[in-house]
Image (cartoon, rainbow, N blue to C red; front, top):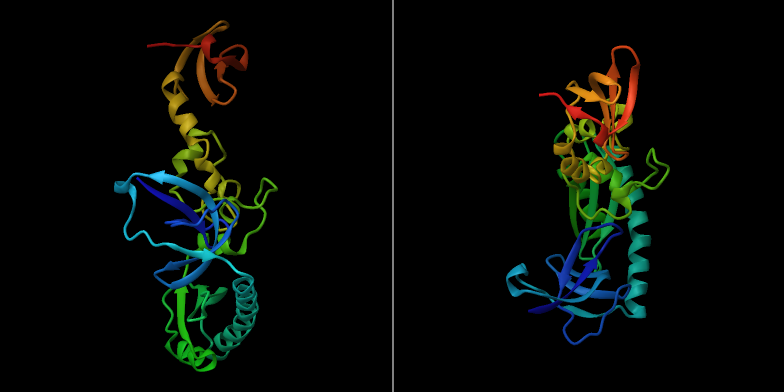
Length: 266
């Protein structure tokens, strides 16, 4: 068994695991860790726990130290530098007339690289832009094209539920979402009602999907003929969360029954 802690570098970002070594860390501690990109500043979001050696993806890098006041000051300077870099990069994009939308700028902790995130309809030849930025900032420059879901995650916003969108608050990674999930939940298939700010299917369609998949075998299909206390009819809709079946009866119209009151006709 090995002891690890989970560290997150961005709000709602992916969680990476590191060895705490001799440090006694707790959730909320700010730390400096070694990554493939060099030194990074992050926050402990998963406290120390034992993990079997076979579950660890090598190499398990160490937490170097708790963040010091000097580290906090460096992070503050990086944030200020990111805002300035955003303005300069946007000016250069306009000068070159590139068909791209700048979304975010990120400085690595030690300032050895600046990453510019952007969206575009297709491939963009940004070689001249990279040369201009490298000449201005005199450090390594990376332009990274992202998708619309990542753009929404970075920018944030309010969903149709009135809450801040899930991907910007707690979803570390995107999971596949399909139109089948909306159908199983008897939701409107109008794209404007089941799409998020990114224009893709809402991530929350997946949250309750397992409940519907577990319950489906115990419910008739829509269109099935069933027997009810008021006679035979045809299933018009289901409400699995309420545990009810809506049946259209020849003489009574649409009536809602509890699941146990409905019997499928073979």
